[in-house]
Length: 316
Image (cartoon, rainbow, N blue to C red; front, side, top):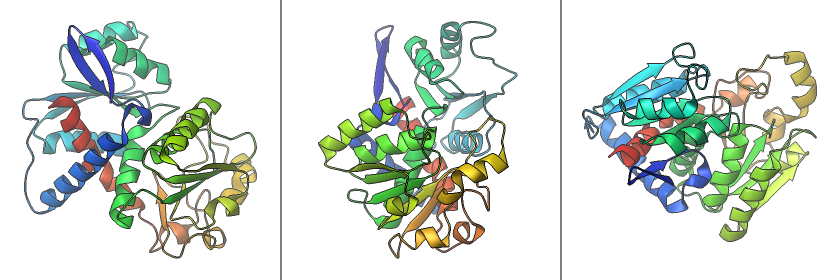
């Protein structure tokens, strides 16, 4: 995990997937699966009794707020919610000052914001762990949940081929490239021209892939990307917080919709994933979203379990 030192104390943070090692990801996945099983058996895990998590939201959220808040409750702790109007990072006071103030009240801070630089600045100035709940460039908690779900459904991660279709220049794609490369998975990303992932992310992921002997493929051909895929994934065509232009997006991305014709290129036992919310008839057809191959709701539930494992690791 990313580490900083403040007041002689070493702090761990999760800001991007590359802050984690493959071993750390594996440990969190297995711990999340264990706690998930035991929770369903009625066993409690109140290992963070008396601990508090600050949650700063500059972007709207359903799943992120719900999973972190419920997760802290199940762990015996407490979550404090800051809405976009409650705490405007960098407006009322500097980000550095906010980091130091909140560090005096809570044991960790989860932040869902726009600029990734804000997350980095918080980590440099806080004396508590910082968790990236989403920025424009990275979404590590979602991809940790995705990896957990793939492991549950396929029994392993190494050697799995994941195909991602749609807008490649977004936080999901960036975190997927890094996370899959770390875990020995092949990734094929199909996007329209001009919508490729950030070059710095591609370079970082390719460097990891060269060490793990995996393949990263960038293409404009969606059928090529999906060919023999174990996992097919997409995301909304409009970035969260941006103004939607459905007609323009349909023109740009129409060939990248996940539908029955496209998934015919994947393996017979492929699984379909989406971080939600999904837009039926846009990035995915209703038939695929509701099919027996779809594991989107399992993946959503796993946000709760993987984040609990991460919280225990960071705060304990």
